[in-house]
Image 1: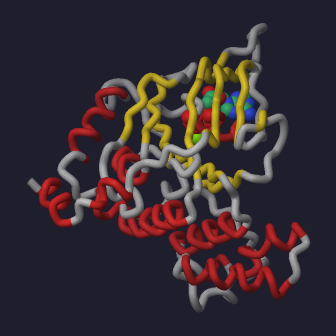
Image 2: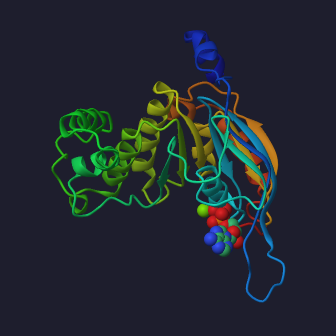
Length: 282
Ligand SMILES: Nc1ncnc2c1ncn2[C@@H]1O[C@H](COP(=O)(O)OP(=O)(O)O)[C@@H](O)[C@H]1O
Ligand SMILES: [Mg+2]
């Protein structure tokens, strides 16, 4: 069987590429969030009783039906929303406002159209007051690693959607965040561009030992890129299942996608999410 052969060829994969078990980097403790609704006296809960821990260096995906509160979880993790109940910790500190050590990446690249790609990547560093020469070195390095050599002086409108997302990734990494919140960053890309970007993202997260909380509606993408999956119920969203992705190649999703275990695991997720019944994925 393919998997056994792979272990026979490279037995060290299984040891070296295991999910990390460092100190807790992100923790949600009994978190609930309600938003006021028109015509209702009591604000209904969007999410309820959400608890999980993510270790330093771990990549964890959240999957769940549309509107179950996935983006709300990321917004609370980065301090943009406050929980109505419970507590959120990042790096051991309770979150009560916007946090510097986390960075967000969204489906929309949010690049500034009047700035060159290089100056978009440098933006956060410029705001921090870093000297021009210093930030240029950082931007050049990241543009190389994100395969944007030769595009530094282009403007966003001159780049394809995939390249703009690469630039957004470079800009996110320029701030050297401890934690990345990724809210469907690849969902607007075509299938092949997406796989290439997943590969680069996975490698960088692995090499730089970043902690990431990743939202996607693509079940195979979640399996290919994560150490663990958190499956949510429909609104009010809560975590109904936690699945450890016990497979090698977290830093190499193209290889992981080829493993025989992917199909059955995706099938299990489809069953949990009742895909094909009444659930709409987001
Ligand atoms: N700022 C907000 N004001 C009011 N309702 C919100 C706000 N943000 C999210 N919600 C509601 O909370 C629920 C969860 O939203 P969201 O986290 O965006 O879901 P998901 O990302 O899983 O699709 C939805 O019903 C949404 O309408
Ligand atoms: Mg969302």
